[in-house]
Length: 496
Image (tube, rainbow, N blue to C red):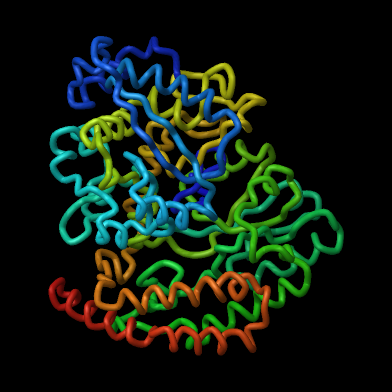
């Protein structure tokens, strides 16, 4: 997920302090965080919160964290210890730590990393309905109501969604310098297959460039709404009968993987793609032509600012509102938290206070960025030492505009959010309790085959059948039958 404000990420991506003279904002934030009049009372020891969030650990994190704590101690008498875990490791490490009772207060969760619905049902997160009412009124006032409503699990909220783009739209991203150098036209690019002439040109002329920069979590874009992200149960996006299919038995998967295999063999994709967790360094080096990301309005400006060279995009699909886009970026309070009230106060401040939100996101003014207007910033040379995933950190509509962003950026965001097409499974959350053993076994098969198949590393002619046989042996058909039964009941209850 790479939709960041500087390096985007979001989720779609694709996306990731002001001086204290902004007294009006500071006053509002203080009042909104439960009117914490005693928040800065030096006679009371500050509450220490532990916050685990996703993204590549940043070189200047400790430096920025110190400045954040000066601010939050004054505002709500709390400090926060920010611990970052890289994208590829996040789910596994968080599962282990949550199961072992590792001390933590706030943690990133989503539909695609440390699964929100499954972990809410397993008891990893605290139910926050009452905490929201008492300490999170600022969140409720600023957050698009569709996010809180759409992220309920069995009628309750267990996390705070980031106020960001609501639909998910995939785009192809391009290194604009290479497009211009070889006069490459992206107007006709949409499908995976339509990329080939561009990839071929760059491969033949730029031996140091990776034509198609992908990571091991990549999936070809296919016309499915997945029951659980990156597992093979889905319905077609244009479904009328809501039949759950095994994507390993569809012609769409076979066609997509044939193309991926062709590109891998042609050298358009890195030979290490099946073990690659990030391409951020490659993007910033300029040694790439194309990749795919979840977009948001004006995302090109964010990516260009982050990578240090212009980025162009063209749509790879339509804008749909999926469960995973509603739940694409969330902060939960750990069920083991010893300070749930203060954790919600912090989340309220993070989502309502521009000073804190931009400090967490962009670092220290004068070190990592400079203000070039009341609500506009420019990255400084040291910005690369602190380049956080904006999409993962709360209300992005508080973040400063970049140099090229229009003044009406956030209004356009709201229009984009209203334009999305509801995906067929929007609002349906599968309860895997009855098939938990089968789901675990299916997950194990996925770990064995998914990355190598989806990235073209292995021949789909052999491996689709091998993987499907293993999926069936693991109980995939049993899972699909249970999904279908729940889906049919949900349709009846909701008149779908």
